[in-house]
Structures are given as C-alpha cells and as structure tokens.
Image: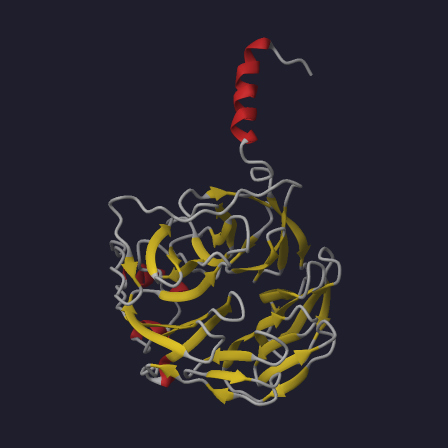
Length: 407
C-alpha cells in the first residue's frame, strides 16, 4: 500500500494521540459463548470465578413455546470455553472463594459446591435469600426479601439474624436487601430498598408504554448498611429518594461507585455516583439517556467499568433486548466507550471481576463476553475531582429528584 506524503501528518497525529494510553484504546469485549436453540432461551443472572480459569454462571432455560423452565449452570475450566449443565435448583446469586468453594442463594436455601458446580448440597434452609457473600470458608452473610439479613460462622450450617444500628424500621412485606459487597475482610456494604406497591405495579410497563413514560414516580426508602470490622457491627441508614440503589462497589483504594436505577418515567434511566470511604460524600459522575446501566465493576487496579443497554422504543427498561454498551474511566470523570462484539444484546448484563486482566460479562440473552486486553500497563486509577460548581452530596440526605419526562 502506498501512503501519499500529505497523509503522514494525520497518521502521526493519530499515533501521538494513542501513544499516551498503552493497551487502553485497543481493549475490547469479545464473545466467548452464545446460546443458540430453537426451543429454549438462556437467561444468565450471575457469574463467579474461583480463579482466572474456573468459573460458573447461573441461570435457566426458558421455553419459547410454553411455560417451561429448567435451571442450569454454565461452567468453564479454562476461562474461554463454556459447557451447559442442567441442575435441580433455581438460584439468584453465586459467590466463589479462592479455596475452590462455591456458595449460591437458591429458591429454597443456600447451597454449597466443592466441585465447580457439578454437585450442589444444601447447607441451610433460608427462605427469600437473594444474595450471599463469604469472607472465608466459615464466615458468611446472606440478604434477601422481607428484610432478610443473616450471618454464619460455621460455613453455612447455622445462620443467625444480623442486627443493625439503628434497626431497619421499614415494613418487611415491602423491603428487600438485594446487594452485598466486601472489599476485604473488614469493609462491607449492604444495600436495598422498601417500596410499597402502587396501582402502576398491577400491569407491567411494556403493556402500557404511554402510561409508563407519563407516570410520575414518588420517593421511597433506600437502605444502606456498612461495617468496618468484618460484620461484628453494622450501621444502617434509611434514605428517602427517587430510584433504587441496585449495587455498590468499593475498591481497595477506598474509592467507590453506587448505581441507581430509575423508572421509565424519569428523564434518565440510571445514574452513577462516586464516593470515598469512609467520608460518604457522593458526586454524580455519569448519566446518559441512551444508557440504561445494569451493572458496574471496580477492579483492584485499572479503570472502572459500567455496562448498559441501549433502550429500544419508548421504554428504558423493556422486554426487548437492546445493544450492549460498555464505558470505562480511570478518573471517574471522562468515560470512554469500548468496542463490544456487534452481536451482544441484552435486557440486563452482569459484570464479574477476578482481577484487572480478567473481567467477564454475562447476559440474560445467553451470552458470555470477556474483556480482551493487550499486554501493556494500565493507567493508574485516580480520585475524582468534582467541578467547582458541583457540591458534595451526603448519603444521609435525600438525593434531589431528577427531572421527570414530559408527557
């Protein structure tokens, strides 16, 4: 190929612009697995990795022609190829210990596997548990519906209710603790919400999209609980705000992200907030009408990631899958869109991080994608510097309501 002289300045400019971010611009998300079947769709809901090679995704097969489902695991032993395994129980959350032990929150209790998901044994009959986290083989926590919050000190054989200070006061019939995350054996978070049903909950938004985009939402209680001593003491807050806090991630550098999802009637489908632990001061760092954010990841090193679905039609949250978008940032202020396999679409996607070089994504459309990195150093992550006109917001105060969509 011949390159004429007048193009050399342009090429030099491009090379100069990309030279300062080694291995960053070329990173992309590649498709490792895609479920293809004439009768059944695969819905993956969570994934966990024991090490950089061995992992298990949980979900279920759903018939397209009749009301029929079957729970499954998707297993990899090399971090690249995946095999589908039919199991007996529906599970909502899975957690992996580096010792090779898996725990899962399932429909009738908590299960344990020492054989990469090929054999599961129930260790506890706990109702309504939706998420689990273990600090080690013996100490673990579980949260779920009806304000469920439990702790074990013997590997899951016996569980005791956790008491927070102050006690969570919301009605258990409408209260769900949905997410739990520890950054180490001391610092951890639990988040959830309390939301009494309304008339709009009688029919899903996708049946009445015009109503969904006009319906004004009302504030409800979001719940935050944190510990700094490995779970011996939990401090809780109840905050009246719009939206629901769906996940909180804290890095080893004590920099964190909180993801809030809103209803279809708000101007934005989701907002991402930055905070520093333990000050708790929060700053909004990302929102985009084109990005319904479903999950975030904060590896020990390197950039932060968010995965979002590009809405289709009138609704942000729709039963119709949308194109997947992934953004990343090393300063929580400038977010760059990454290259994602063109086939990737979903209603919701979940991120899982083993380390900065091994990050995966699973979708409710039966896909597994992996971050493909070049062999180069990652830029260091830096603290967010808010603009001068953006005051800090405390988690102890209600967030200002975002603008509603106009009818």
